[in-house]
Length: 425
Image 1 (tube, rainbow, N blue to C red):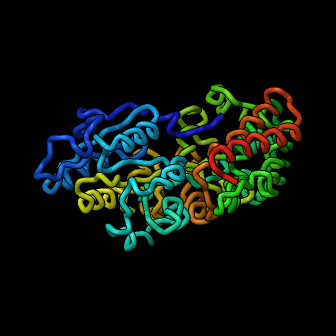
Image 2: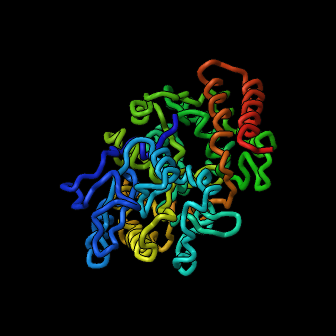
Image 3: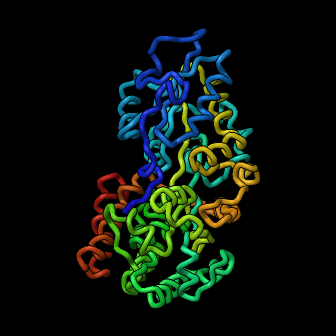
């Protein structure tokens, strides 16, 4: 099951009554209704930005520019791709999901280079590894970071206590420093608290293990490396909880029911805290957070970009740099659990308070350091497509009892074919 805050939040379109914004699903270049010739349109999806901050942006820049906002439902990437290709009704400002950025970089000419508008002078305020993921090979900056998804280990302190295990976040982190340590804890938990499991599925472990490295499935020279040791090691790590019997094998919609009962830990990004809270409100105060086994990874996080048809790039850049300033980033975390890409936000009151759901723990003390320690890795345009067979085959291991070695061979074979079809050597 691919857990995503975007899937749990209600992503209904914004309405003028709720947000005080002018809402349209069109706009962009060629659309009418300009204000002093400077009317700009912004596309994003529900949960991508703080609606309150976006609403304030309209009034903040109201004397200089008219701002029309559209919350786009459905397949955002497909709608944006189709609109860019058509070249009409293109938004002046658009969101791009982090998982989609790599696929847009080969078509970077469809966007403005933010460095030309002043991003170079601001870039040091944002995490370098996140900024680089929206850069072309020749240094053009296509995306302005919105948020990130630093990962950690969420765990049920009450279940740990019942099993006679440490419950303090620092002690749990020390006891689960490596993947082997973590799985040993899981074995102990299952023994002492029958009917509980350590992980929801092994695909989630694989995703994290891959994300902890500096290499993925395709290298910078466009060569397939999904059969190399770093991917095989991630695969072997993922198989371990399955063979140890501490894998809940959840690959359907039963996660909501399991999270409040049988799952003792979750590997997830900062935004996953909201998923847990919404799915299991009755467990308030019982959860804690600590550093993830083997080091942090990143899951999710998006960008704002300016299509080349943007009618007023200078004003558009002022708007996005204001919306994504460290202070407003911190507000985004308070409003919608959007974890900032600007480290300066981590020390602001909006992020440093205790979290009642996590027993009064100041969870920024875990996620802040994790965010700054995420490894700098290369993600190729075809990476997501090439990764898919591995996830499918891990599900086949869980759901069909397929032998892990056979599943590995099939995953590599299918991934190589997909890579070749997408021009990867």
